[in-house]
Length: 300
Image 1 (tube, rainbow, N blue to C red):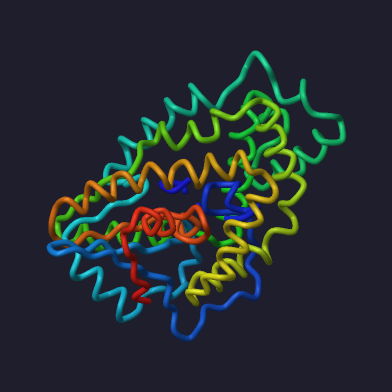
Image 2 (cartoon, rainbow, N blue to C red):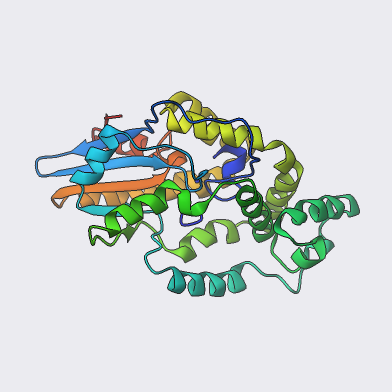
């Protein structure tokens, strides 16, 4: 999830991250992830689409983005991690509340063949299907996918959100959050049991083939290729599961647009950094702002 972290089939695995192996992806010579701006008489809001987990060697900063970072005096993220220890405690409590199901175990709803596949997939997190049995399906899926991408060399501390938060922290600027950890978890926990199981089934079925997809996604993001990002981040998810698409993207985007409208009533320069999938496509934050008559400009 965004504080964890948002993309196609793989976005469903952690809101913005999925499974990858250390493969042949290489950053473009000049990385220039997409950057937009909204301006009125006394305020400017920059929108940067991010990748929440990256390989440590990934280059993503450029001249225009650096200028926006320097100009902004306020930072908004999906979910800041200003106090990691406090957040860890909150997440532990929330996982206990929304991520566990001791009375209805996974083994009661999965076939023997699915349990075998789950056991194989669970190995990437150093676990077994028996250990995951008490997890709700959505939490088992995220446990598998996030462990796998970290094992493959993708690091949350190298993600754009973490890096930007640190940059503003050096200037004594505390980021603000567009949503809470509980709101993020409820995106998954609010699904029906059958939808959760389908999410888990897709995760364990696809995890072996996902490396090429994620590498390609990062390459498209770093190049600022909006059309390619829309196809991979948005169209695939909407086609596969429109209900989850609405929960992960459409509904959250609509909530954020309301907050952006409030920001525009103030003044100054703000940077909003959210998962790249939230800023591309017909239901994106950018599209929703345009529909309200709020003009956006692509600046990178």
